[in-house]
Length: 143
Image (cartoon, rainbow, N blue to C red; front, side):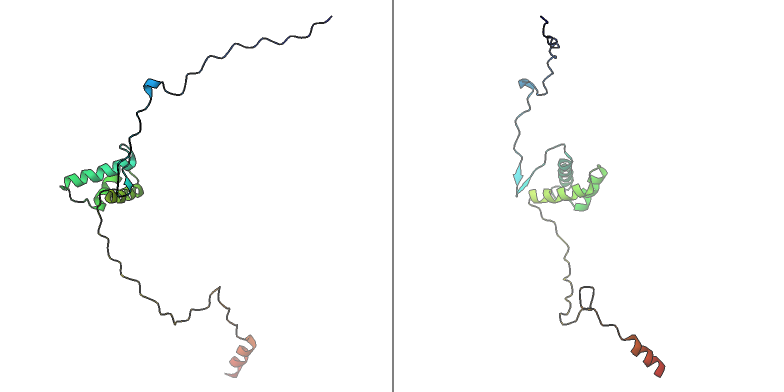
């Protein structure tokens, strides 16, 4: 009788991979809740947004507690390599967080257009009837 072919032996087990998770002793510290005032949370230190806040606070300290000018903070942030849009947004949040309000320039109200004036017909309006070219030629001949 012929023997049935046997299955090849299983390859040796792979060595265990190093665990991607840190050991219990190396776990991160529990997250500290962020400070929140006036509906705005303070960003983490060491981040780009946190650096904007640190710059604003440093300028405020140099000014003896006086609210820093927006232009000064934005210029210092740009010199530090922070995106101007990020700096502008975070400065506004920093002001709200600290209960500061910046004086805004008064914008003159736009002049109101008279409502009785008719709008010229455009693409959406009715098309004007073209004058009859035959009548125009006749008028030219009469002159």
